[in-house]
Length: 309
Image (cartoon, rainbow, N blue to C red; front, side, top):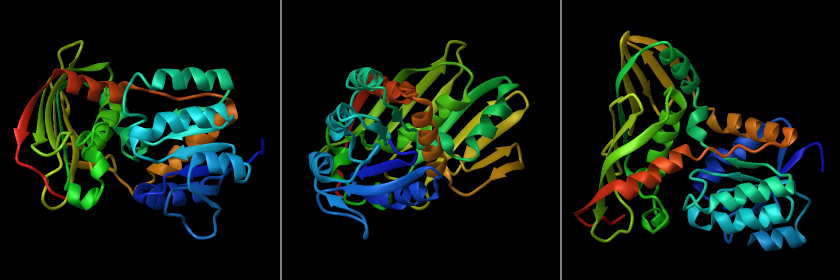
């Protein structure tokens, strides 16, 4: 293989264009060489309608970044690994937990990297937040993750279809941060899921979580937020409140502003991908997805008014 990691993006939607495309351009040791999408493509790049066409007729590639809806990722990842390609999975890594186990085995057998990405963990304030609370006693945690689905996911009907996660599509970002900054394993105790009468996935959720030491954690996810989004995690500690806000870009220790930085999640994510492929390693942490699955298993379903985009 080339010393340069030659990447094809599969699924050129909003996130691929707004985040993956510029992030790859900023990443030393990586290059975008093709795009797979039934319709969309950026100018100046080879364009293929599906993955088999790329693998058959396209330029030489080393890796694929799968940016399709989660319902289709397993088959695409399996085909890419069988063809000897490294695979980056946008979050959530799949529609189910069980479909990821054979992908992990296939990546190991092929000697290729499988990277289940949690981009919010690479937000600039997440690492400092983990270090800040590491030496403290945490008394309780509140997670407020609310946004307007019409603004942040316009026309994305798949998000309310089976396997599309509904409000857990952004909510899993909060869970990925939560499982990164807290010192102990977190599990779901109960959940209340609001399902619109005309949809298959929830539009809101209230979840109670804890750890082995009884830490109370309350999470609220909502797709019906009016105005600016609320992407906040508040940890009440023995030394005062620690607040992680703006999706992990801002950190406050009490009233003191510790971090207030711009979004560089995806460039950091791709640097990690290049390093993993260079080292011959995979990174597939399923903890955030497990919490989503457990929320559906334990959650009480409540019907709410129909939602129209």
